[in-house]
Length: 166
Image 1: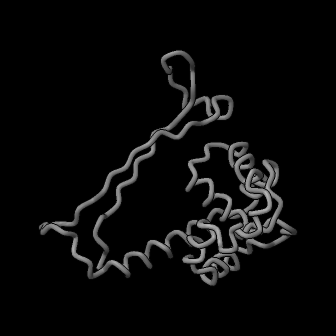
Image 2: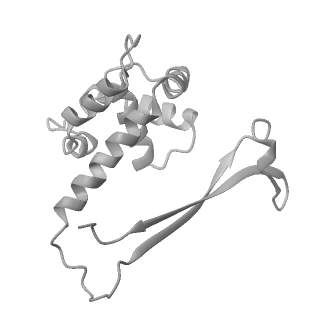
Image 3: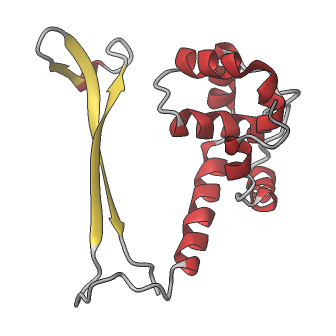
């Protein structure tokens, strides 16, 4: 029997909860929230990202399989598709944007004096691209012909400086 913390909980311990609460307070994230907090939603979405979950049903199934470990993972609210969907709809997205920007800034400060490993005259950039699947009935403007079926999706590209900004 494991008496220690889960790996997920250990990872989440590195995140500054005080700064997250500041972001929540800034946008009144706990207004009319009874049981499933902004932190619970963040933990569920972080878990989904780390475990490559692709849908609310997938997230719910995986978290429910964890059952009694949810409390030890830091998730205090009841996890269901309806709860996740409602929380995603009601919570202000700017809470999570501000928190992500704060984490990026902290990471840049940590690696400010780290050498890149090669000498370059200009700032290098990383380019990442992916396709985000959409519901065809909700986004008919994003339609394209796939090999066997019509589907809906949009391309998404990210262009990020590799070295920290000084």
